Length: 347
Image 1: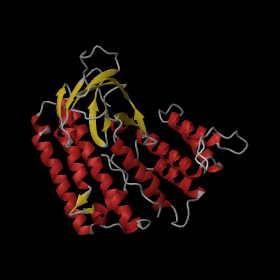
Image 2: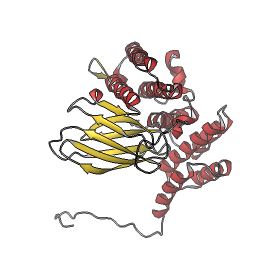
Image 3: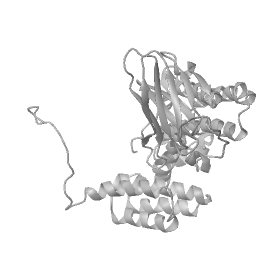
Image 4: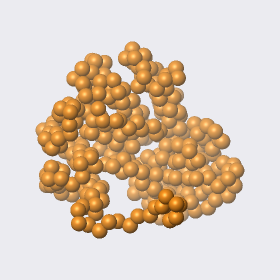
């Protein structure tokens, strides 16, 4: 079985926006309040929903020993990930909705938020703490558990999320649409955990998955808001479904063949998916095979068929970027510039 990459990291709808920032229409200001002993390394990123690569969306405007100010440019409401000195914190952001973070030294879950989206971000911090705890049970990674142990562990984690929803979401005045999005993010994360467990234990024998986990090898929960909202958790779930589960169900375990390339695409086309879901999953499939095999007659044909079906897809730009990278490495093309150090240490 192909090696599975575990993701440990830690939907777009219309919300009324008021003019709370003096910045441009697509910007907001995030202020981090914390005592910094040294200049912190800070990254604020979104995600490309096809490649799952991180996309920087902010830069430091001002920095002091106890305060860092970031300017962020985003086209609409979305999730983001704040990385600071190896600590990760998911955020919910909206243009022109400034946010204040009062951060402890060691525990991101204790961060206090102020601003229009303070409640939503406080919820995300607590949900993120549950997710991190879900990686382990009695000192073992969840993929090392027996089926009985894993089922018990999963039930316990789901119960933690339900209690969080009851104590936070149910008692706030957040819009119902936002509550739905926040809760769904946790459920998508649980699906990803189950996918990893199934692949770790059943590999290429997915037809032998027990009834308790059979739903995991079906089409993942889809909502177009997941994509427009840049929910990285859904990008991970869709990646596992297209790149591992469907490939395993539709191919022989011995090889990745051109017939498998087209079989996955045909399956998605014929399945009872919405048009938006077919657009997304077929783009993920194109990206997967182009990543694995590069430019071949089979991948060329796959992309041609996809473009014919979705000539105005938002995902074409990501596919074009990867295709261009492979084209630059084709036979007869000039070698790209590179730098290195000789065995003697001379640049």
